[in-house]
Structures are given as C-alpha cells and as structure tokens.
Image (cartoon, rainbow, N blue to C red; front, side, top):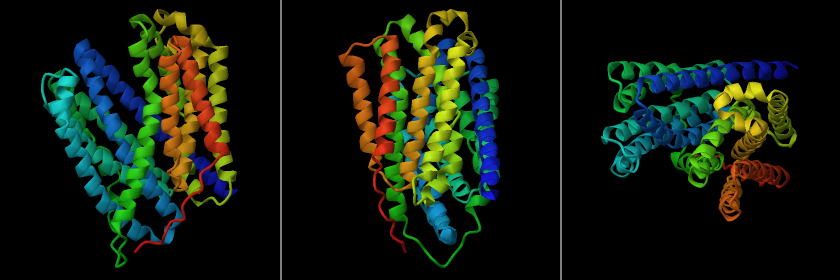
Length: 401
C-alpha cells in the first residue's frame, strides 16, 4: 500500500514536471514565432530538430544509469562515479560531432551562418549531462530532483531563448540564449553528481557500450515516431501536408502525456522478475490512450480548436485517427523502455523493421492523408503486440569491476 502511494506521488510529481517543461517549451515556440520572420522561425525550428536528435544520447545514458542503479542500489556510489566519467566523454563527443557537422548542415538547412549549428553542439553538452543526472534521480527514485531537472530544462529554454531573442531577433541570438539556458537543468541536478567518491571502481567500458546500444534503440524509435511528418511533407500536396501537420499536434499530445508512466515505473521494470510490472505499465498507458481517443471522437470540434481552429476543419472527422496513432506509439515507447530496463537491446531490430514497413506502405501503396495516419497506427499497434507477446530474453548483467 505504501509502495502504491509512493508511486502515485512520484507519478504526480514527474507528470507535473514534464507538463511544466512542455508548456515552457511551447511558450518559447510561440514567442519565437512572434518575434521572428517566418523564414527565420523555420530555420530555428530546423535547429530544434538537430537538438532533438542529439538529445537521444542523453536519453540513452539516462536509461542505462537508471537501470544499473535500480538493480544494484548498494553499489550506487561506484555506478554514479563511472557514469560521471562516461558522461564527460559522451557529452564532449556529441557536442563536437554536432558542431563539426555545421559544414554539411548549414547549406542543407539554408542557414546564413555556421554559428547556429555550432551553438546546437554547445547546447547538447549540458543536455547530455542532464541525461545522466536524470538517470541517477530516476534510478534512486528521487522524484523531486527529477522534476526539478525537467522544469529546469523547460524554463532554461524559455528564459535563455527569449533573452537571446530580445537582444537580437535572429536564430543565432536565440541559439546563444538557448545554449546558456541549457545549463539550468544541470545546475538543478548538480548535487546528484557529487559526493560519490569510493574506493571501488567500475570499468566505464561496459557502461559506455550499453549507453550506445540504448541510444541506438531510442534513435530508431525517434525515427519511427517522427517519420510520418517528413513523409507527409514529401508525398502530400501543400494543403494536405498542412492538414496532416495539424493532426500531428493531437498525435504528439497523445504520445507525450503518458510518458511519465515509463519514467516512474522504469526502476520497477528493471527489477521485475515477472511480467506483472510490465502489464501494469502497459495498461496505464493504454488507458490514457483510450481516454484520448474517446474524448477526441466525442468532442471533435473541441479537438479542432486545439490543433489550429477552423482553417483545418477538413480534418475534424479524422482527428480521432491521430489520437489512435499517438496512443499506439505511446505504448511502443513504454515497451522500448521496458526492453532497455531488462537489458534487452534486441528490440532495436523490431523497431527498424517497423520503420521499413511504414516506408514501404506509404510509398508502395501511394497512401493519402488518411492512409498515412492509419498506416502509422497499424504498424505501431502491430509492433507493440509483437514486442509484448514475444519479449526478448534479457542478458544477465555481469558484476563489473
């Protein structure tokens, strides 16, 4: 009973933190859209895409750190010490790789200067460190600290990015502020990385290898959950791609809101020796999804207001399909983290297979707007079913020295 109460409290805290983070990020996007010319806002949005891909390394590090601490709490000190060493390597590598990629990405994104992409690399250094801090807080089930980190991330972007735009209304200035603001979550979680000195030393190589494997799995999921927006832009005419983009607002809401479940239950999934913890987690996410679909189907006009208003009224009757797609992807998200919690990295093969299935269906069958969202929903549902019914056997972790 006490465990259930703690889970509810942790879930409420983390949910509030994630909602606050997303609201702050959304507020910055609104401010940027108002202060920048349309073509400059388009450039800034593209830069956000670079940061989104780059943060996968931090998410992978978070998953590995949380899993190791959750299953071996008695050795959290040595684990955190090894995590700090790996984090410094990974954060520096991500920052340098992205910064150097400016020679390719700048002309590809039609940017006026090399500096915005370099600043993306600078921002990803603290964001990767934030991943390690989040993993420590998650593994130790310190939900208050994790909530502070999430809020720091959202408000760091809002305050830093807005300050940069007020200095000069350019994407470069916005990225300077965002790169500085990205240190706010690191400051919020600074205590998590210190005070863990110990005579026992764990090799960083297995941890680094596991972090890279987790990053690969999360990258595959990122591709799966975002590829339809690119397909829509490429395959549909401008009008229909705009309608699809508005529907995606609802799909992303259905996808992102239940993610606090995987964050809070991750330590239990890592320690679980039966399927009960996973069944409970999947049931919670599925319940949120069913609620989102039912609400959208019952109140389509209200849903339309949330995704853009009357200009997008043509898609009103199909919004519930986007809620279905987002909800199915939310279940896949939970199951991917369940696989990472069990050290079962073979799940990445299934995800890439799903990516190929979406591509083949979208281009081979020449689907339209409705066909594309149905394709994503069906592929995600099949993937979730396969992963759940045919779970991969986890490797037994070796006690490392």
